[in-house]
Image (cartoon, rainbow, N blue to C red; front, side, top):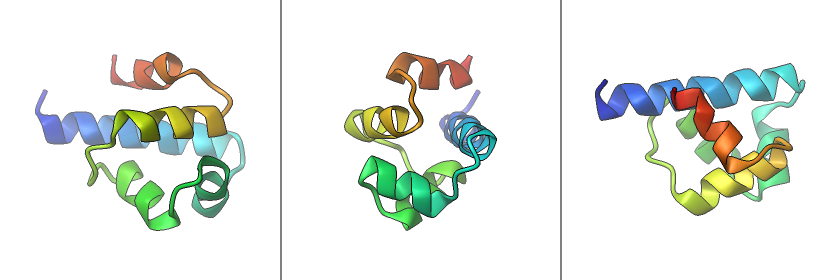
Length: 73
């Protein structure tokens, strides 16, 4: 699996969780303290997300970072 495909898979997993929680990108951005454009870039697999931002997104989604990273399995 290439790095780009891993980023895309991770982003798709975040999008899936966000949508199951009926959150918009803007709402997730607000909850995580990140910009909406950043969330969009992560979901499209365009950003190599930093650990601190993984933690912020996981907390905003009510999960642990390890649960969020399970989307890469």
